[in-house]
Image (cartoon, rainbow, N blue to C red):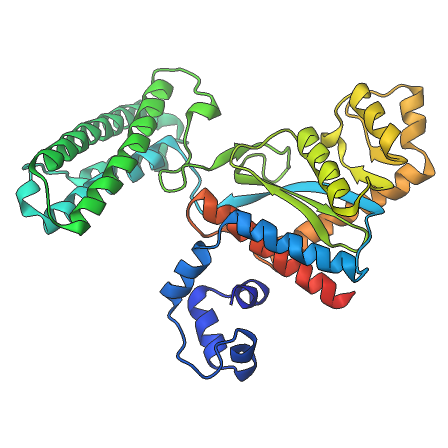
Length: 386
């Protein structure tokens, strides 16, 4: 069912309908003429497959392709891209409003289940929303700077207030206790979100006071707190929110290596891992390796790999001397750089056809699993054409 979902590019509801109406797909998914599961059950089943399991599945497919001599390890090209998480563009005002509305909603839901936990608070969501709307719509106007600052201060204060109320609410719920499983789950959810809300309020207060807050101290969504801010130097997208995905392809366009991490490392280290993985898989380093300039790790790093790989086509960043210019203008180097450019086409296919431009699942674990399933389906299509 995952293969049908990814290759057809369908949402979960449509996957169930498509398979249910097709005898071929029923046989393919081994559902046959039996009762079809619901989309909620399919979602749960998909999320139960861990990233480690997808790595093993891709390894098995790779061994099969190697055994059948569908792929060879003579060439390797590496490139990276960003897969976005499912969040809106994060601003301090929008994050503050998200924090306020989620906190008030959770406390209302808990009280509706357990009325004895009511503490007599009125949240006035509409007033806070008006503050957020004014800040977000007037921030770019020249004559509204003082009014924007005044409303932003009120918005920060309201979020700081509701964080204090939420903390008291949690303490009160723990003291009184509750027998409702639903209420216990909602209190636990509020406790988890509260830490993120307080971090949002602290960062907004520091920015309001004129401080520069580094990206490492920020969160960019209270729903997807694992999201990273990535600057890739793209003209149309100078800043992206998601995670770095690195792929390594053989000459047959088979993705033999992929890497997605919660905290992205430098491209040089990931490139070294890709080469070590290639040696482990194929028994030797590739005869030809190519990547862009982000994978250049200095003269010592270049010398180390040129001793092991006959043609190591990675260009140098910045100024080059005569020997470096001569090296990068060699015939083999230029041919391998053309080979490397083909990786851009594969990334485009992964995004446009297989839906890797944005992950709609929540949590980093599900994010990494979706990347593994996308790579698996891409490789299946490639092997069908070889």
